[in-house]
Image 1 (cartoon, rainbow, N blue to C red):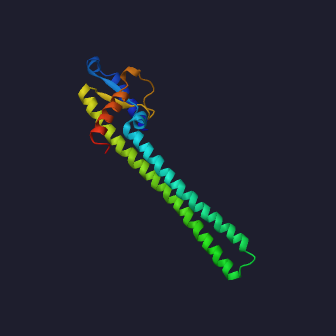
Image 2 (tube, helix red, strand yellow):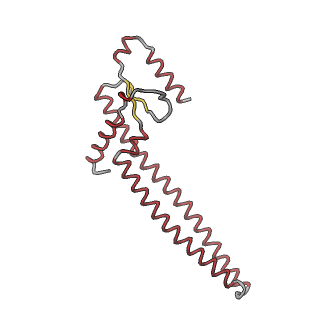
Image 3 (tube, rainbow, N blue to C red):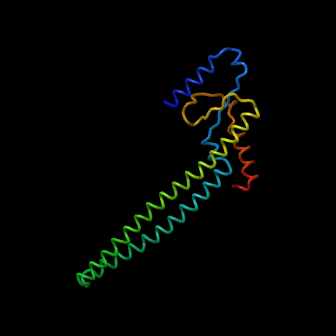
Length: 176
């Protein structure tokens, strides 16, 4: 539905009076490309990669502990009394639940962090796009990767300018 409205607005603007069309200046930006290729996007990617590795290391350690506990339980199963065996099994089950909860929490934390970083970068890109649009007199700046833009000549692609301006602003704030 959103694409339909955007398409309708663009079509209406394009078929408007020739006087209006003569003054109209249109461009597009590929936000996905800007997000991935900007300095902030690259820094976020590195940061997220490090966080993932940290969680993977911790998960592997906990999984090894569980594996050892299970092997110990299997080895001593016949020698343990029913009460001791039940206690070891409860301990193993509790640690398994804790491990599963850790994995779920880690995934949620990583998703939230990725969303937060992406949101911050997109807010910064949006400010840069608005400033660039105002400065260069664009009437309309569209977003390429959302599917509403079916075709556009590369000469009206502002993505590289937006990335350069955003990187400059990002460096000016020391990456914050």
